[in-house]
Amino acid sequence: MNLLEGKRALIVGIANERSYATHIARSLIAHGCQCAFTHLPGEKNERRLLRTLNNLELTDPWVTPMDASLDKDIDAVFSRYSESFDRLDVLVHSIAFADRAYLAPGSFHTTPREAYLSAIDISAYTLLGLVRGAVPLMEQSGGGSVMAMSYYGAEKVVPGYNIMGVAKSCLESTSRYLAAELGERNIRVNTISGGYLRTLASSAVGGADDIEKHNATRAPLRRNVEGDEVGKTAVYLASDLSSGVTGENIYVDCGVNTIGV
Image 1 (cartoon, rainbow, N blue to C red):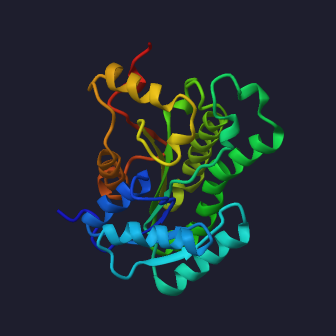
Image 2 (image 1 turned 90 degrees about the vertical axis):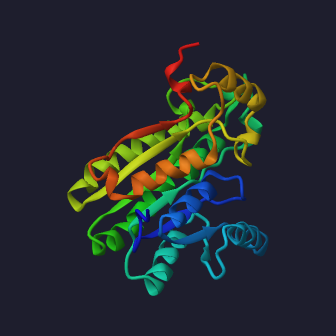
Protein backbone atom coordinates (compact mmCIF):
# COMPACT_ATOMS: atom_id res chain seq x y z
CA MET A 1 0.00 0.00 0.00
CA ASN A 2 1.51 3.34 -1.09
CA LEU A 3 0.07 5.78 1.42
CA LEU A 4 2.25 8.63 0.17
CA GLU A 5 2.06 8.25 -3.60
CA GLY A 6 2.53 11.64 -5.27
CA LYS A 7 3.75 13.37 -2.10
CA ARG A 8 7.10 15.11 -1.75
CA ALA A 9 9.17 15.51 1.42
CA LEU A 10 12.20 17.48 2.51
CA ILE A 11 14.25 15.61 5.10
CA VAL A 12 16.72 17.51 7.26
CA GLY A 13 19.06 15.68 9.59
CA ILE A 14 20.51 12.49 8.12
CA ALA A 15 23.95 12.06 9.68
CA ASN A 16 24.53 8.43 8.75
CA GLU A 17 22.67 5.15 8.23
CA ARG A 18 21.76 4.90 11.92
CA SER A 19 20.01 8.28 12.12
CA TYR A 20 16.31 8.38 12.91
CA ALA A 21 15.99 10.54 9.80
CA THR A 22 17.37 7.66 7.73
CA HIS A 23 14.74 5.27 9.06
CA ILE A 24 12.08 7.88 8.36
CA ALA A 25 13.34 8.39 4.81
CA ARG A 26 13.32 4.64 4.15
CA SER A 27 9.73 4.33 5.34
CA LEU A 28 8.47 7.36 3.42
CA ILE A 29 10.12 6.15 0.23
CA ALA A 30 8.66 2.67 0.69
CA HIS A 31 5.20 4.26 0.65
CA GLY A 32 5.79 6.18 -2.57
CA CYS A 33 7.03 9.54 -1.27
CA GLN A 34 9.67 11.41 -3.28
CA CYS A 35 12.29 12.74 -0.86
CA ALA A 36 14.80 15.58 -1.03
CA PHE A 37 17.62 16.00 1.48
CA THR A 38 19.93 18.55 3.07
CA HIS A 39 23.37 18.00 4.57
CA LEU A 40 25.83 20.06 6.54
CA PRO A 41 28.18 22.05 4.29
CA GLY A 42 31.36 20.34 3.14
CA GLU A 43 32.30 17.54 0.75
CA LYS A 44 32.77 15.04 3.58
CA ASN A 45 29.22 15.57 4.81
CA GLU A 46 27.84 15.34 1.28
CA ARG A 47 29.68 12.07 0.68
CA ARG A 48 28.38 10.64 3.95
CA LEU A 49 24.81 11.54 3.01
CA LEU A 50 25.13 10.15 -0.51
CA ARG A 51 26.58 6.91 0.84
CA THR A 52 23.59 6.56 3.17
CA LEU A 53 21.13 7.35 0.39
CA ASN A 54 22.83 4.83 -1.87
CA ASN A 55 22.01 2.21 0.78
CA LEU A 56 18.39 3.32 0.40
CA GLU A 57 18.76 2.55 -3.32
CA LEU A 58 18.33 6.16 -4.39
CA THR A 59 20.35 6.60 -7.57
CA ASP A 60 20.04 10.33 -8.22
CA PRO A 61 18.76 12.02 -5.04
CA TRP A 62 18.18 15.74 -4.71
CA VAL A 63 20.60 17.02 -2.08
CA THR A 64 21.79 20.45 -1.05
CA PRO A 65 24.03 21.88 1.70
CA MET A 66 22.60 23.85 4.61
CA ASP A 67 23.92 25.29 7.83
CA ALA A 68 20.66 25.59 9.77
CA SER A 69 22.18 28.18 12.10
CA LEU A 70 22.18 30.64 9.16
CA ASP A 71 18.90 32.08 7.93
CA LYS A 72 20.42 32.72 4.51
CA ASP A 73 21.18 29.02 4.14
CA ILE A 74 17.61 28.06 5.05
CA ASP A 75 16.26 30.58 2.55
CA ALA A 76 18.60 29.25 -0.13
CA VAL A 77 17.41 25.67 0.41
CA PHE A 78 13.77 26.55 -0.21
CA SER A 79 14.70 28.70 -3.18
CA ARG A 80 16.58 25.76 -4.74
CA TYR A 81 13.83 23.33 -3.80
CA SER A 82 11.15 25.43 -5.49
CA GLU A 83 13.21 25.45 -8.69
CA SER A 84 13.07 21.64 -8.80
CA PHE A 85 9.67 20.79 -7.29
CA ASP A 86 6.22 22.33 -7.53
CA ARG A 87 4.97 21.11 -4.16
CA LEU A 88 6.05 20.23 -0.62
CA ASP A 89 3.87 17.94 1.45
CA VAL A 90 6.16 16.81 4.26
CA LEU A 91 8.96 18.42 6.25
CA VAL A 92 11.08 16.29 8.58
CA HIS A 93 13.19 18.13 11.18
CA SER A 94 15.73 15.79 12.76
CA ILE A 95 18.57 18.06 13.80
CA ALA A 96 19.93 18.83 17.23
CA PHE A 97 23.18 19.99 18.78
CA ALA A 98 24.68 20.53 22.20
CA ASP A 99 28.27 20.86 23.34
CA ARG A 100 29.09 17.36 24.57
CA ALA A 101 31.34 18.85 27.26
CA TYR A 102 28.12 19.60 29.18
CA LEU A 103 26.30 16.32 28.44
CA ALA A 104 27.39 14.42 31.52
CA PRO A 105 25.62 13.74 34.82
CA GLY A 106 26.26 16.57 37.26
CA SER A 107 27.43 19.09 34.66
CA PHE A 108 24.21 20.89 33.76
CA HIS A 109 24.76 23.70 36.30
CA THR A 110 28.09 24.50 34.64
CA THR A 111 26.57 25.09 31.20
CA PRO A 112 27.74 28.52 29.94
CA ARG A 113 25.40 30.95 28.21
CA GLU A 114 26.92 30.34 24.78
CA ALA A 115 26.45 26.56 24.97
CA TYR A 116 22.90 26.97 26.31
CA LEU A 117 21.80 29.35 23.55
CA SER A 118 23.52 27.34 20.84
CA ALA A 119 21.60 24.21 21.83
CA ILE A 120 18.29 26.09 21.75
CA ASP A 121 19.12 27.69 18.41
CA ILE A 122 20.11 24.53 16.52
CA SER A 123 17.74 22.10 18.23
CA ALA A 124 14.59 24.21 18.43
CA TYR A 125 14.66 27.55 16.62
CA THR A 126 15.63 25.81 13.39
CA LEU A 127 12.20 24.16 13.34
CA LEU A 128 10.59 27.59 13.19
CA GLY A 129 13.08 28.75 10.56
CA LEU A 130 12.46 25.73 8.35
CA VAL A 131 8.69 25.93 8.71
CA ARG A 132 8.77 29.59 7.72
CA GLY A 133 10.43 28.57 4.47
CA ALA A 134 8.12 25.60 3.94
CA VAL A 135 4.77 27.37 4.43
CA PRO A 136 4.46 28.94 0.94
CA LEU A 137 5.23 25.61 -0.75
CA MET A 138 2.88 23.68 1.51
CA GLU A 139 0.10 26.19 0.86
CA GLN A 140 0.57 25.55 -2.88
CA SER A 141 0.09 21.85 -2.11
CA GLY A 142 -3.12 22.45 -0.17
CA GLY A 143 -1.47 21.83 3.18
CA GLY A 144 1.23 19.67 4.65
CA SER A 145 2.70 17.76 7.56
CA VAL A 146 5.69 18.84 9.63
CA MET A 147 7.33 16.49 12.09
CA ALA A 148 10.29 16.96 14.43
CA MET A 149 12.23 14.46 16.51
CA SER A 150 12.09 14.80 20.30
CA TYR A 151 12.92 12.63 23.30
CA TYR A 152 11.50 11.91 26.77
CA GLY A 153 14.25 14.03 28.33
CA ALA A 154 12.17 17.02 27.24
CA GLU A 155 9.57 16.14 29.86
CA LYS A 156 11.47 14.36 32.64
CA VAL A 157 15.06 14.58 33.83
CA VAL A 158 17.36 12.08 32.13
CA PRO A 159 20.80 12.24 33.80
CA GLY A 160 23.37 13.52 31.37
CA TYR A 161 20.84 14.75 28.80
CA ASN A 162 21.04 18.19 30.39
CA ILE A 163 20.79 21.11 27.96
CA MET A 164 19.48 18.81 25.23
CA GLY A 165 16.47 18.15 27.46
CA VAL A 166 15.84 21.87 27.77
CA ALA A 167 16.26 22.30 24.02
CA LYS A 168 13.85 19.46 23.26
CA SER A 169 11.30 21.03 25.63
CA CYS A 170 11.62 24.20 23.59
CA LEU A 171 11.25 22.19 20.39
CA GLU A 172 8.01 20.59 21.56
CA SER A 173 6.58 23.93 22.68
CA THR A 174 7.60 25.53 19.38
CA SER A 175 5.79 22.78 17.48
CA ARG A 176 2.59 23.37 19.43
CA TYR A 177 2.60 27.12 18.76
CA LEU A 178 3.27 26.46 15.09
CA ALA A 179 0.45 23.91 14.99
CA ALA A 180 -1.98 26.40 16.51
CA GLU A 181 -1.02 29.14 14.06
CA LEU A 182 -0.81 27.08 10.87
CA GLY A 183 -3.85 24.86 11.30
CA GLU A 184 -6.06 27.23 9.33
CA ARG A 185 -3.67 26.68 6.40
CA ASN A 186 -4.09 22.91 6.75
CA ILE A 187 -0.50 22.53 7.89
CA ARG A 188 -0.09 20.05 10.74
CA VAL A 189 2.90 20.12 13.10
CA ASN A 190 3.79 17.26 15.46
CA THR A 191 6.77 15.81 17.29
CA ILE A 192 7.82 12.18 17.60
CA SER A 193 9.41 11.25 20.91
CA GLY A 194 11.53 8.31 19.87
CA GLY A 195 13.00 5.95 22.43
CA TYR A 196 16.70 5.40 22.90
CA LEU A 197 18.46 4.45 19.69
CA ARG A 198 22.24 4.23 19.41
CA THR A 199 23.05 7.05 17.00
CA LEU A 200 25.82 9.58 16.51
CA ALA A 201 23.82 12.08 18.59
CA SER A 202 22.88 9.73 21.45
CA SER A 203 26.47 8.52 21.83
CA ALA A 204 27.46 12.03 22.95
CA VAL A 205 25.25 11.82 26.05
CA GLY A 206 27.04 10.75 29.20
CA GLY A 207 25.49 7.61 30.67
CA ALA A 208 23.98 6.53 27.34
CA ASP A 209 24.81 2.88 28.02
CA ASP A 210 22.88 3.03 31.29
CA ILE A 211 19.87 4.55 29.50
CA GLU A 212 19.94 1.78 26.92
CA LYS A 213 20.10 -0.97 29.56
CA HIS A 214 17.43 0.64 31.75
CA ASN A 215 15.00 0.99 28.86
CA ALA A 216 15.49 -2.60 27.77
CA THR A 217 14.53 -3.93 31.21
CA ARG A 218 11.92 -1.37 32.34
CA ALA A 219 9.98 -0.68 29.13
CA PRO A 220 6.61 -2.47 29.01
CA LEU A 221 7.76 -4.18 25.80
CA ARG A 222 11.05 -5.14 27.52
CA ARG A 223 13.21 -3.82 24.70
CA ASN A 224 14.49 -0.68 23.07
CA VAL A 225 12.72 0.77 20.08
CA GLU A 226 13.74 -0.08 16.53
CA GLY A 227 14.41 2.69 14.03
CA ASP A 228 11.83 1.42 11.57
CA GLU A 229 9.12 1.78 14.24
CA VAL A 230 9.74 5.52 14.26
CA GLY A 231 9.78 5.40 10.47
CA LYS A 232 6.33 3.82 10.39
CA THR A 233 5.01 6.51 12.74
CA ALA A 234 6.41 9.13 10.37
CA VAL A 235 4.45 7.53 7.52
CA TYR A 236 1.30 7.83 9.62
CA LEU A 237 1.97 11.51 10.33
CA ALA A 238 2.81 12.23 6.70
CA SER A 239 -0.29 10.50 5.37
CA ASP A 240 -3.99 11.30 5.42
CA LEU A 241 -4.40 8.68 8.16
CA SER A 242 -3.40 11.43 10.61
CA SER A 243 -5.44 14.21 9.00
CA GLY A 244 -6.93 15.20 12.38
CA VAL A 245 -3.67 15.08 14.35
CA THR A 246 -1.66 18.24 15.07
CA GLY A 247 0.14 19.80 18.01
CA GLU A 248 0.85 16.34 19.44
CA ASN A 249 3.93 14.64 20.82
CA ILE A 250 3.75 10.97 19.89
CA TYR A 251 5.81 8.54 21.96
CA VAL A 252 7.44 5.66 20.11
CA ASP A 253 9.58 4.27 22.92
CA CYS A 254 8.18 0.81 23.76
CA GLY A 255 6.26 2.46 26.60
CA VAL A 256 9.21 3.76 28.64
CA ASN A 257 7.45 7.10 29.18
CA THR A 258 4.62 5.35 31.08
CA ILE A 259 6.91 3.93 33.79
CA GLY A 260 7.57 6.02 36.89
CA VAL A 261 10.76 4.37 38.18
